[in-house]
Image 1 (cartoon, chains in turn purple, yellow):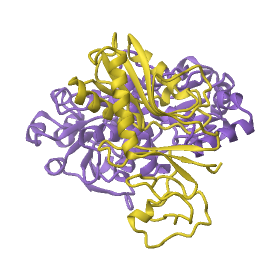
Image 2 (tube, rainbow over the protein chains, first blue to last red):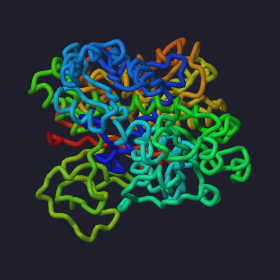
Image 3 (tube, chains in turn orange, red):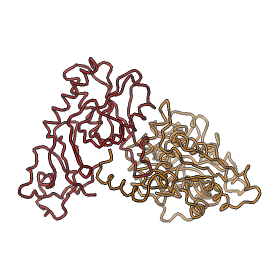
Image 4 (cartoon, each protein chain N blue to C red):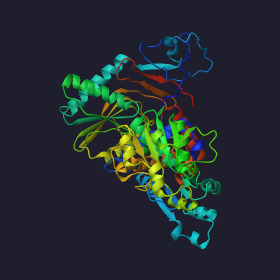
Amino acid sequence: MKHLLGVEDLTRADIEELLDLADSFLEVTQRDIAKVPALRGRTVATMFFEDSTRTKLSFETAAKRLSADTLSFSVSTSSVKKGESLKDTAQTVEAMGADAIVVRHSSSGAPHRVAGWVNASVVNAGDGWHGHPTQALLDAFTLRRHRGPSLDGLRVLIAGDVKHSRVARSDVHVLTTLGAQVTVCGPPTLLPGATEGWPVTITHDLDDALCDTDVVYLLRIQRERQDAALFPTLREYTARWGLTDERAARLKPDVLVMHPGPMNRGVEISSAVADSPRSLILEQVSNGVAVRMGVLFKLLAGDAGAGGGSRAAGAGTATGAAGTRDVTGQGASR
Amino acid sequence: MAASTPASSGATPSPGAPAPERGLSVAQAPVVDATVVHDRVAHDAVARAAPIDTVTVLTVDDVRRALTRIGHEIVERNQGAERIVLIGLYSKGDVLARRLAAAIEGFEGVAVPVGTLDVSFYRDDIGLRPVRPAGPTDVAFPIDGRVVVLVDDVLYTGRTIRAALDALTDLGRPRAVQLAVLVDRGHRELPIRPDFVGKNLPTHVTEDVRVTVTDAGTDDGVVLVKGAPA
């Protein structure tokens, strides 16, 4: 695996391998010394063209716990302000020695474009409305830890602004690939226009849908959308599609609540629900570090000669690498 | 580690080949000679028949005796079992560590803590070959001030043990670290030596040592595969 650009490329086996890796890294993150030397000498750059708190911090923490060096880039303080193009910016970052580039961009497909311009591994950290692969992986990971080992038949309700949500798109793919039954719920104006072939059940009635689910996954209402008059007022949105205290009180005791953050407390989720024992929201954040460690490790070290990193290239000649593989084939490199 | 072989494919032993040992599983061994005719009866015993150029090194009884002896040696060396913790390395050392702990508890009456260590993230060949952890590290007890006995199935180059020593350092500061292995096959590439050995087995680098161990101890064995395919 060279890049992680979207979850569409991932098979069930790929996803399960990444989640198994995250299991190993979760143990690492819980140690007193939460650091392993796995990616020593490698460099991970974060290139965020959109605001982010948790994803950027999470990737940088993950890289540091793998002993990789990190380069950080944010638009507001960069030459993008002077008009530097995406291509030039990406190639500049790679020229600094980045082995992996983590890209967030408001345009769908930007990470794909970057992957075509550089030799480094590219990780999509959210692109437009398209996808947010590591968020979907960490959501699946969190659910697997609570309802695993298998998600087969698990009922997941994704509620809110599905139309503009890259998280929803990636989550639907990953969760259904793992066997979960996904229902999406929201006002018609906030659901995608074309949903044929999408492996989900669609409903507009939250109260009805809440009766019949194991997990409620709330999406952020993007306040900037309010100008487009997709719903009348925030208060009316909350009344019909928010997880209020009253609705939470009617949930079965073992129903879990998730949210990708950042939350609008009091809009799509009440403050009390967000802080309740059934909420996995903070656990999602801490699991995110382990999952991203798994992704970076898989891309930069999971395969022989993967990532085109300086270490793999410099440490062995072609014959040396071939010899190593031979030994591995015998299971003899103990 | 072992290459997988379809469960149904079994090599028919040719005349003169050693008869398969009772209870010895070599189901994971590859069919070395591709020209061997497959017996489609596919009876379980046939499916487990040894490929023609393997040599049984330790039988199920040999493994049991070796583990019992190593258990005694560990306790003798450390004047008791109170300070000892056993940490097995994936993916067979963990089973061996549990077996050793059971043996020690049997004759010494002390329940020795047992952990499992994954050294994938400490290996020196990351990026040179596929590295995939067998499972998470599970050491649920402090190792500070204890005598850690690392347990693995085969000691070869010593690079895995080097990685394990680094991994241990991140978990704490043991009083001492000792090494127990079921088979020492030589060819060390680092200054590492075992403290407790089940069997010293001189090998050629083209040969392969295959270990089968189970928690139940009913299906154990070590075979040497001659001239394993490159």
